[in-house]
Image (cartoon, rainbow, N blue to C red; front, side):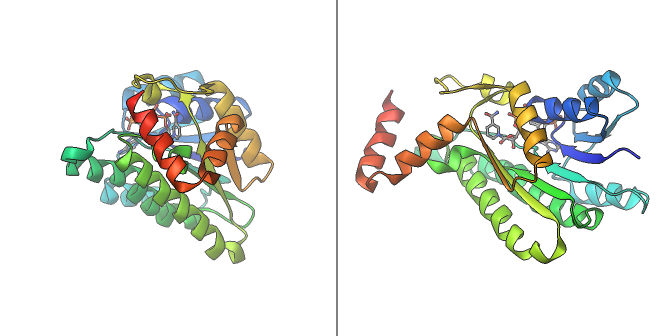
Length: 245
Ligand SMILES: NC(=O)c1ccc[n+]([C@@H]2O[C@H](COP(=O)([O-])OP(=O)(O)OC[C@H]3O[C@@H](n4cnc5c(N)ncnc54)[C@H](OP(=O)(O)O)[C@@H]3O)[C@@H](O)[C@H]2O)c1
């Protein structure tokens, strides 16, 4: 029997590419997102391996119904909670609805999916959660996105502590800039922008190797970490200068 992965946000970007990569390695892939048409295109690449699941992760009742409909024999070797969205906000007139939407998909849906799919993971299996490097540095207009990713990183690390006795591995994935529809909307320069195919390979190999944290591209991770070690005042001035440029 082939190994099985559930990937959320599989209709686009990192999730789509990673779903395709796992399927090519012979895995059975449950590919979940809202866009049925995009998922059908993905599944057409490899109908024997890819099972499209069209669902809204923020619709808890629909998610619960689908989880309950899964046969008891179905379990996942890996659950990759990747779906997310980025909305920029204006500090002088904060868009509260943007915060609600961002936290609904980037945070609440991750917590709800963890609760729903934990019973489908056994000792030795992996729960992998996609956060971001965004919360390493105070980027301009990122109050909603960065805060949601800081929350999801903390959630994941705390979860790892509390699941240690289950034998389920918890992997925190914190990408930098990856070339996907999400970043193609950005109008600023993105240092060390990584092709999405490279990101998918890093995720596959990192999870397979049992890594508990993945950060790529590494050079951006090191740069942001160095910036975070600077005296607070200098770091704040640098962040303000980035805003003006
Ligand atoms: N690209 C980057 O540079 C970068 C960097 C750091 C972290 N990340 C994180 O990586 C993840 C994937 O990002 P990406 O760049 O691949 O973005 P993307 O191309 O925009 O893909 C986002 C995926 O999430 C799905 N999604 C959004 N809302 C959903 C909902 N309510 N229910 C179900 N699925 C939903 C979308 O599918 P539907 O619209 O079909 O539902 C889509 O498949 C996100 O968590 C993002 O924050 C990305």
